[in-house]
Length: 155
Image 1: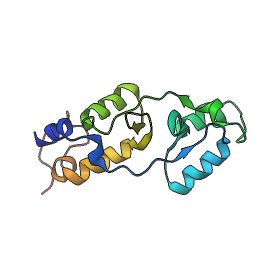
Image 2 (image 1 turned 180 degrees about the horizontal axis):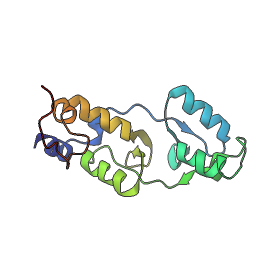
Image 3 (image 1 turned 135 degrees about the vertical axis):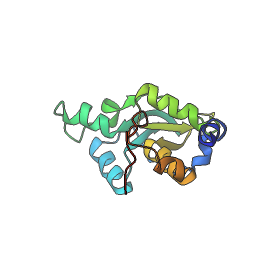
Image 4 (image 1 turned 90 degrees about the vertical axis):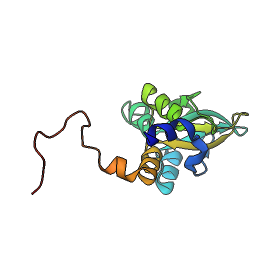
């Protein structure tokens, strides 16, 4: 199948990721949420001296801020996920997706060998790639590929 082969051969850099939204861990949560809303992203990368030290996601906002009653002035360092799982731009897309599935991640920071963030791989970006490159395969999948109708649908 061409889709499986391409996912194993093509690298994460092929996904043309936009530059990441990076903030300091000392910034308040409220500032991060405002910037995330402005840029329409689901996470912010936290960096010191241009090196990735953490990630703050919508899940972190729900679980580590709102659910425990913290206010939006708390520093991101208190609520972030430190040392997040990352991916290299040269890794195959399939390896990145596997890492996302196994860890239950919706966002993976993409970093260079020096630990500098280059982008964020999101589930949304992977889906967009699949639809753009394999529309016939994606659009023709049944809602549950293991279940097939007993009779042909339509007239």
